[in-house]
Every structure is written in C-alpha cells, then in structure tokens.
Image 1 (cartoon, helix red, strand yellow):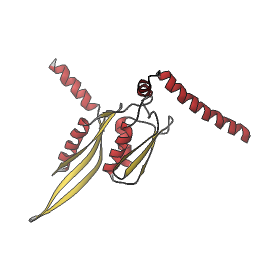
Image 2 (image 1 turned 135 degrees about the vertical axis):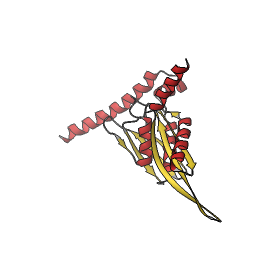
Image 3 (image 1 turned 135 degrees about the horizontal axis):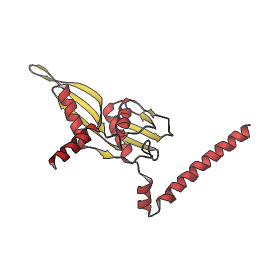
Image 4 (image 1 turned 30 degrees about the vertical axis):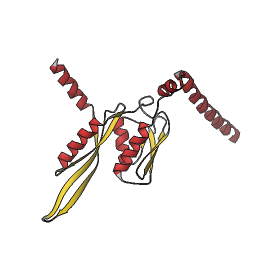
Length: 193
C-alpha cells in the first residue's frame, strides 16, 4: 500500500511543468555593507488544466527556486479548457497596474503571448491562445493578472448549472452565433466576386 502511494506521488511529481519566470537580486544595506538575497517567481502546472504561481526568497538562487516551486504546487487552480487546447471564451483579468486580455483561438494558432504570460499558458497546457498585456511589464503583476483572468473562465457546464438549463442549449447558442458570423463572411466573399 505504501509503495503504491510512493509510486503515485513520484508519477505526479514527474507530470508537473515548472517554468522559472524571473529571478531578482535584492540588496539590503546594513551597517557592515550589503546583504544580498534572491527572489524567484515560478509557475507550475500539470499541462492538463491546473496551474499555480509561487514566490520564493532565499540567500541562494537554487533555494529560492525550490521554495517558489513548492508554493506554486500548493497554489494550484483548476481551469476548464475547451477541447483540452484553448479557453471557452475571451476574458480579461487585472492585478495592480496590469491588465491582461486573453482570447481563445482556433486550432493551429499557437500561444501568442509575452514571456510571463506564455509561461502560465505552457504550464496550464493551452496550445491555442492570444494574449495582450496592457499597463505594466512587471512579471509578478502580469502572471497574477493572467491567473485572475483564468480563474474567471467558466465552462458551458457551469453556466448551464447556474442557469438551470441543459448544456446543449448553451452550446447551441454559441454555434448559432458563430454560424451567423460565418454565413455573413461567406456572403461578403460572394458579393466581392
């Protein structure tokens, strides 16, 4: 029994994707000189819809990274994904001065995002997404704003439960709306010919 649990935990540890987003050297000026410490920001996820971020501080870089990774794994959040590759809908999130606009994308688009937000999407397991960061380039605020946006994503199942409807009703409306856009585009193309 104990061996099975250890094997399960080791497989779970291997499944995590860890991305080091930033390392910052901090100097504290004291009577005898300067004390240097390091802070590390790490994003961890399982690549299947769970992601979290953590900040670690220590006198050495490896210790700071280790602490940040442990905190990131403790702060994992589950995000509903559409077809396991993108988001269900477009969303915005903010933290501090940072504003992040995250848009779902069709298959084959890839991850179009800046450095810190790209790390979040790679750890989460999203393959197709477009993201724009506005207001700040601070990696801490960008990562937290991205996580704020991702926490607001709702799946059609959650919407259907909240509105006491069937999932097929919710999804059918989305298909009708996208079908109208596609038919309008086709009409414009035919009119151009």
